[in-house]
Image 1 (cartoon, rainbow, N blue to C red):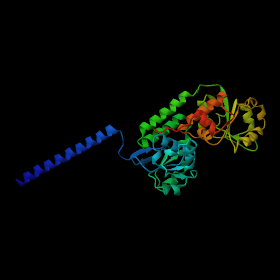
Image 2: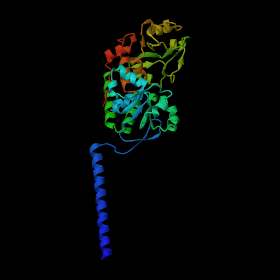
Image 3: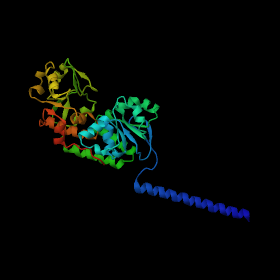
Length: 344
């Protein structure tokens, strides 16, 4: 009798456990189905091919590159950033959008090399870095015990690759809907700009040396992608990276337009340009098709592979169409392009 009773009781207990387990499973499935949110750790492959485990909905995120910060803010993680690099913060100051961040955010002055000691003191749950800029420090991050997610960042050469970084961030932080909305916003703006081929050749000059040689942008760079999106053709697209180019090569290319990043100020840059051997023979020089970009927004937009680069296409549209001033500064950009970093 006691044996039978024990068996009966055991059966009841098993049934109760099974019912509870099924109910819990249904509840979990219902929660997942209704909210669409992940409630566990996220395991993801980052831009460097590394496997990274990220806690769900982290409240302590550090971003150490402008290309990264733009994406994280755009997908709605601004208030979860406890630390950002100086250049990211400076960009937000240019846009009058520092309110996007927490008032207690820490500004990190060094990102190359990264200030690993300073980052450790912030006790982040996850650090998001630019693989092109900071990927070489992956081992140092690991030795310091920091959990780091690398986006491709400055390795991106076109908008499709930027979109891949955005989607990676959306998956990593369970902000997939926001990531898709940010991508849609970028594509809507790009569609407004006239990016059809205009048969105009462009030479980009990033820095001029005393002997007249200069650094430009080759065909596998993001700047080349911007020129192409705006309907122009980079005269140095057959080169790679950011090559050192001679005045003779520039004369041979004979571009229709020359775009120069300002060196210290407008006057000094113009002086360095005028001193380049043979430049007076160029079509761009004769027709006054030389445009100097100041530091600040013009330089940021053109050089950072990130969502706001859509405005760089608009800037180059103005240049190629001949409606931009010969000195393009932050004030002109803000007045004519209405640059805004959206939050989704």
